[in-house]
Picture 1 (cartoon, rainbow, N blue to C red):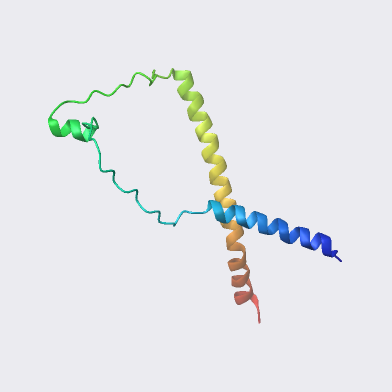
Picture 2 (picture 1 turned 180 degrees about the vertical axis):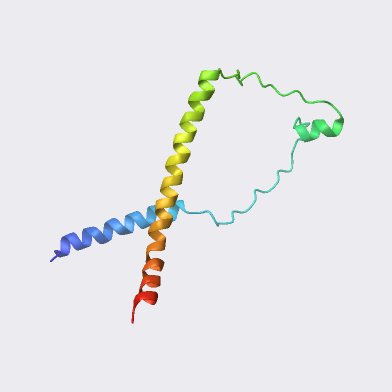
Length: 115
């Protein structure tokens, strides 16, 4: 049997854990919007939609993308890996569907071959 000290420790631990979780769970809490300041300054927007409205063409910097064509050997290796993965997934799906159909097959067996 659990002693009263360990029972109290469990209750305190659960209370602390619940408090931590409840204090961090604010997904559906509506927070009030901040009040606008009386001395607001507006800066011109440089977003893409603003620039499109003004008629200027926006140039995107794509220099961080490094691309090159794959060699034939790399493509064959990638196709082989993808084929192995697809075969494993197909066999797993087939096995799962067979496991799920076993109760139905049993019921059919009982229905047709019982007296």
